[in-house]
Length: 112
Length: 114
Image 1 (cartoon, one colour):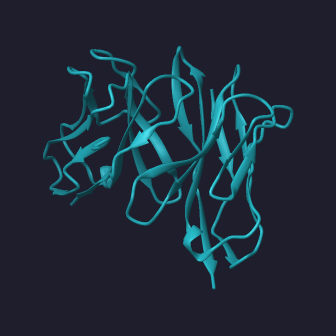
Image 2: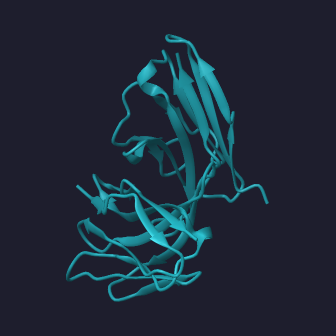
């Protein structure tokens, strides 16, 4: 069972470059989330989606954009990467409110 | 808005010691509460959960009770093992700003020594 799959797993970008992180889930979940994890700060919510075609801002949305064109995919875009966006990014999905979330393995992004 | 506060780490224990990691929350309504665990180099995995007041979640010897009167969900284990070394996150699921969000605490690193 694949669960939640994130690609790529590692990436190094130069300042100003753009990239897209892909999250795919095969569990038919409605809710999907993008978090970033930084030392001492836990997981902070970047953007989330409550269904196909919908997105909403989380705690730290600046510098990121998202799209949910298909229910199984949630894309996170960085239009112009900055060193402050160096982090580990996690995607998660779940069926509905109150249920557990399933996480991907993470994407380690370094911006130099 | 909703928030989760958990004790700072790292917590360092000897094998077979008793573990408590404190977690308190702020939320409107009746959130669901979770503990997740993250092993080195991996994503988060659900450890246990509780969906209403006085519920006790338990798994792998860990347990936590949903205390609405003290807005707490403290994680406990009677006898820790070296293999329990990981980062533990307390989380809540509740409505904020019109949507149901999943909010995490900062995480507590646990190191267990033989």
